[in-house]
Length: 88
Image (tube, rainbow, N blue to C red; front, side, top):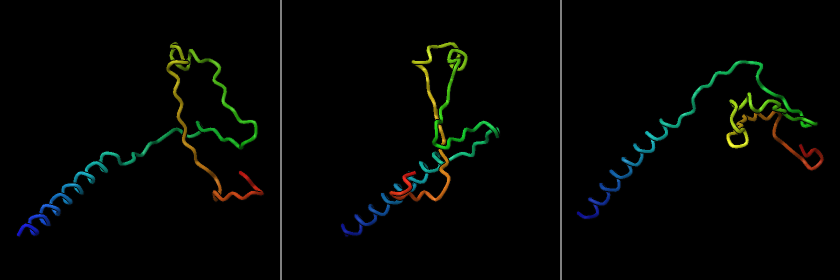
């Protein structure tokens, strides 16, 4: 009799755990983001850099050293295979 209770309890716990994980996964699903074309940068690996000349204008007149934040998305091109002869 005790064994049946522990099996039922274990099943209920698993069911609740699955439900909680399912609800959490719904909250963190990726969202579709649209962007204007032509605002991306392409780096070929040779002398590439980005220069932000007017930091006061870009950062709204605040001290950009305290509030600067950059993010980027990387979309690798090619197969992703790298050998010793062709290190990237």
